[in-house]
Image (cartoon, rainbow, N blue to C red):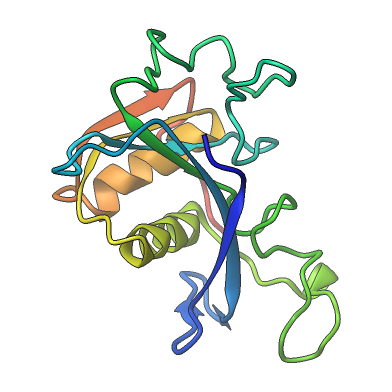
Length: 178
């Protein structure tokens, strides 16, 4: 398990948002678990629920991640077989750019001026992270609740990029209003 890592994406070209507007210099916090195999065929993206973060699991057992009982060697999310990546979502409050982040255009927190975003925008940021990491294909995308909506969106946006979609306890769509 690695510690939470951060990368700044959309430095040269801003993310064009589905509902209009754009965001540049997006900080993305993420964490990885397990060992990447030689041919990179064991990569699974975990999408967190609305109140989650990039830490579904702690190997030291001193803390509990939000999927602690399901993740680890020999468990359903088997860290001895798969390489997992989990990033904080765009618009969240746990490391990835969101309303509490400083707007690079004003030097002040976005606050209520943070643009309206969609699940589609969140998935575009996740894809940009994977591109940055040199990942060209996923074994699976898995998520529960709000994370399940992200997983479903992955299947819609990038069907050739991922082999399996696992949507746990989630609706299949949301109504997006500007």
